[in-house]
Length: 165
Image (cartoon, rainbow, N blue to C red):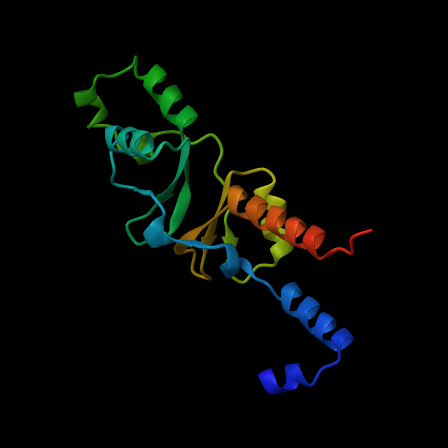
C-alpha cells in the first residue's frame, strides 16, 4: 500500500488522507476499561463515595458483575441518597448497595460500531460516553476532554499549514 501512496499525485494524496480521516472510528478516542475507574453492582455506597473521592470524579460508570454497562452513578445521586437516609454514618453506608441508589440520569452508551456522529451527539451532553460491544459489555469510555484536545490539535495543525501572507 505504501508504494501506491508514493506514486500518487499531491491531489490524490490529499483525497486519500481525507478519506482515511473520514473512516476514523470510536476506537481512536477510546480509553479502555482497564484504565477507567468504575464501580460494580455489588459495591456499597461507602465504596463508591471513596472511589469518587480518590479519583476526583463527579460521575463513574456502574457495571454488572458480568461486565455489562448498567448506568452512571453521580455525586448528585449519592447526595440525594444520603439525604433520604438522613445522612448515614460510614458503617450504615457499608450496608447500602449501590444498586439501591436511585440514578437520576445515566450517561448514554454507544456501541463500538456506531458512527462518529452518534458519539459527537452524546458527548455534547455528557462528560464521558460509555462504549459497549454488541452484547452491552463495557469496553471503555470516550471523554469530552479527549475530543476537545483532538479538535484543538487539528485546528493548530491547520493554522500551521495555512499559507502565511
